[in-house]
Image (cartoon, rainbow, N blue to C red):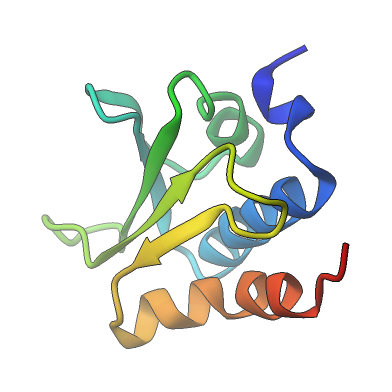
Length: 111
């Protein structure tokens, strides 16, 4: 069992929503664990989720295939109170569309 599986359900749901929504828009996701990239430019949901939680924080980096540079990221910090796993993200239009569902889930969460 990975540490991801041990996160509170709301945190798993919020993270999964971000990954699903990025992939649904045709973007790739890289996982930066604070020390290096655990996974680069993936469109594989299972691989992305499996690459998470090797450290206390991860940054999901979003890219449009064919573009050389990332356009945004979402910063995840584990161990906060449930529903507070997304610590920060870039405020460009594409990233905000990716995190919108996750934000709504977190705001609606009532433990």
